[in-house]
Each structure stands twice: as structure tokens, then as C-alpha cells.
Amino acid sequence: MEVDDKAKKELFQFCRKTNIGILGRMNIIGEFERYYHMHTPMWWYTRESFIHDMINRVLRLQDIDAIIQTRFFIQDLHQQIERLYEPPSKKLTLYRGQGLSYGDFQQLRQLKGGLYSFHYFLSTTMDRDTALTFAQSARQDSRLIGIIYHINIDPVSLKSALFASLDNESYYKVENEFLFTMYTIFRVGEIIQLEPELWQVELSLTSDNDKDLKKLTENIRQATQGSTGWSRLGKMLLTMGKFDKAEKVLQILINKSSEDDLEELGHLYHLMGLVKENKKEYDQAMVFYEKVLNIYRSLPDSNYLHLTKLYNDIGSVYLFKKEYSKALEYYEMALTIQEKSNPLNYSDLVITYGNLAEIYKHLRDYSQSLRFYQKELDIYKKSTPVNYLKLATSYENIAEIHYHMKEYSEALQLFRKVLKIREDHLLRNNTKLVISHKNLGKVLDKLGYYLEAIEHYQYARYILAKSAPQQTSTNLTQRQHCINLVKKGMMRDIYPQLSLAAEIFLCAPISTATMERDFSRMNRILTGLRNRLTTEHLEQLMRISIEGPADLDNDIKNLIIDCWKSKKLRKISV
Image (cartoon, rainbow, N blue to C red):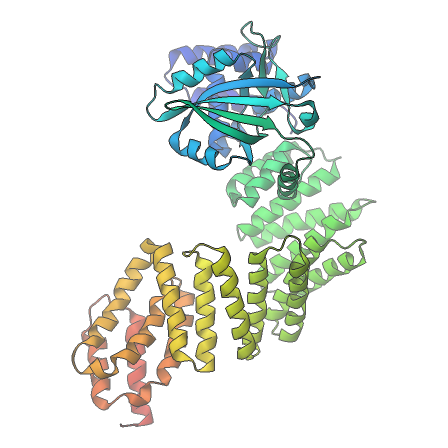
């Protein structure tokens, strides 16, 4: 983003706000503001003051609001490193000494052989003794472990990092010190204990040919496309689900963008539309998407890939607004462009297939929905490496369509496959397993396998209670009243059946809509049990509903009343 007076003013305001009452610092802030232009960012960064600590704390904690307010200095410092960068002509070893918390050190040890990134600007020296002094002094804090990094730089790894000498730039007259820009990526080598609470960690700059770095870089590139660091930050925040902060960054960028740079402006409008869509502000999202569409249509060499993504996003807004015919129109426009491209971009095509399958499901055109879900599945099967969790979701979507088409045997087979994949690749308390067990419960219910259905509902309840005990404890306690009451008195002979039916309700999360669906399923199972109820049983059920505790769920009371009414209306006596 273009550096301007507004960003500079925000920086100085942030400095004052975070150092109120500290007299010495307020004086330095005054100098910082008045004389900033007289020195380089490196000079200010290395001065014995709050600036170094403030900037690195903001970056280390990933405090987005603070990053936005200090963006002027962060960008200025990064750009100076970029200008001063000179590739070394031979191998170079640098050192850094610091303290790490026990938790952070254990995480670092687990990364041995893998990639490791510093979020902040990294000061290093060619003097090992200087670095060792910093590492040893860190041990004075009982919460920290002293670490000395050995950073090995080979000329073949030049392009994967930016660093610059501080020799002529530092506030102090120093020699052989270097400053790395933020987010430099290293490969972790040997980790050796030198003394109690003092460790040596070997780091090496990764080369451009490093396969892991290439994969990481590609993932980051796809998640943070944009022509500037700040637009990439905006997209990263969007990907992380921090929509308010993403909106704040993007609004700053839009305000500062040149109207002549239509492609960049279109990219920013598109990101802002995605933010609004994720915040469920669909009308506002459409305003931004329309702006993007007008820009793309005005460009002579409009990027068709951008258009397909835009059409898919517009379609999704119409889907959320339940304007299904318009959603279908835009999804089909995206597909038309993609099918004409050469070569086919399967990572984007699979999104369009999934969107079309979803819209046809809403339109209850299940055969068409099934066709596109199958196309989506075919792509996932051919992907290298196979993403088994996406594969499971694809199978689950197809199973849902079979369920809607009342093809319960086909749905059962696929739901079982989904559960097997998720059990192999997820932790035992993952809520995706709850969904899998409940899906199996509902289809087994349809097929009349009630006991097996109940078993899966019980698994779902168990996982849900383990994964979110605070959310479910109140629900579970209330619903247990029903079973406890039924256990008493003359209900004992039919307790097993009623208890099993009630177990389905126990696994329902707090969501009212989900509770209603599970109530419906439980009611269907109870239909098979009603003929076993005697008049005495019905009277006891009514007594439970009337005299039960005040916090007994209304849904359970209604269930009991429904059982009673059904029996009375049918005039069945056993």
C-alpha cells in the first residue's frame, strides 16, 4: 500500500496510546515523530528504545489491529531490507541468542527436519559469543529456556529470504550484524543441549528447489493472492475467519487505491464482497460483486479464471438468498467458461461442480445433483495426493442425495464409508464423527434397524459430550430427567424401549432446528413402540409430563403427550 501521512500519523498515535505515563518513552516518541525523516527505519529500529520491542511484539502476537496501526513503519523497514539485500558470495553462518518458553521450545523440537518461520524481524550476528551471552541471560527467567540459533546460509538459497547488513545503518556502530525481514522460513536441523536449560538449534535457509517450501509457498500463494502485502494480509484474515479485521484492512486499501489500476481495484472489491458474504450481509456483497463484474467486463484481456470465481461467488449469494434460479444461472456461466479453458483447472472446476450439485439439491432435482456430485468425486479420486477428508465429504454429499431419493441402502453403504475414512483420519472427539454417526442413525432408522440406529446416536452423544462438555452438559442433565422418571414405578417393563428412544434426543446439540429434526426421528421410532403401551403406561406418561420437574424439556413433555394422544385416538388397548 502507498505510504502516506495518514498511516504515519496512526503510527505515532499508536506509540503514544501504548506508552501513556512513561515519561522517557514519551520524549523518544516526540523525537520519533519530529525527526523520523532524518534517519532510516533501521536506525530507528536499532536504537535503544521501545520501537524494536513494540514492532516485534505486534508481529509475534499477530495483533491485527496493531499491525494496521503500525503498518507505516513495518512496510518502511521491510522495503529498506529489500533495497539493501546483497546475495553473499560464499557460505555464511549467523547466530542469534534468545529465550523461549517451555511450550514454544517443545513445539520447535517437534519441527526437527521441518520448516520454521519467525513472524517478526530477526536480528543476528556473526559473533557466536555475543549470541551466547543473550541465550545465557535468558535463563535467568525461570519460565524460559536459553536458545542459540546457528543459521547456515548457502548461496543456492538466496531467493528464499531477504536480509541485510546493519553495518552502516544501525544506531550503534556495529559490525557483522544482519537483520532478516519478517516471515523468513528456515529448515530445522540438529537440536543439541549445551547445558541445563541451554540449547543449540541448527537452522538453514531453504533453497528455491526445496519441495516442502514450494508446497508451502503455493498454499500461501493460493490463500493470499494479491499484488501487495496488505492485500495479501486482507485475504489471509478472510481465510482465517477474522472478517471485521479483514474488512478494516480492505477498506484502507480501497480508499488508497488508484482508479487507474482497475485489476487491483477489482481484486479488492472481490475480497470485500467475500467478507460481506461471510458476514451474511448479502445485499452489500452483491454491491461489491457488481462493481467487480463491471471492472472485469471493461478490461480488454479479462482473466477468465477471475470471472469464474466471481460467477461462483455471485451464485452463492443468490443461493443464500434462496433465489435458486439466479444462483443456477451464475453457476452455469462459470461452468461454461471453465469447460472451454485449456488445460482444465480441476481445483476450480471441482468448486463449480459442488455448487451446481448443491443448487440442484435445493431445487429437488436429485438426479442432476447426483450427476454433479459424482463429477466432483471423480476429481477428488484422481487428485495426488488424495485428500481423504474431502473425499469423505464428497461421499457424504452423494449419500445425502440417495437418502433424499429414498435409496436408503445406497445411502447406508456410503455413510459407512464416510465414517471409516473419518475414523482413520480424525481425532476421536472431532464433531465430524458426530455428523457421521447421526447420518447412519437416520438411515438405519429408515431401514428399520432401530437398535443399530440407537447405537450410532449414542456414539454421537458420547463424542459430542466429550468434544463440547460445557455446551452439552445442561442439555444432557435435563434430558436425563426423562429416563430417570421412566425408570420408576410401573414403567420398568417398557423402560428399555423408551430409554433407547430417548437416547436419540440426548445427542442433539442446542440448535433448535437440529433438536426438532432429532425429535421427529425419535418420534418415528416410538411409533413402533406405541402398540406395547398399556392404558396404565399412558396414564403414567401423562403424570410424568404434568408432575415432572420444572426444567423438564418441553420437547420431552410434548413427546409424552404425543404418545398418549396417539394411543387414545387409535383406541388401541393391549
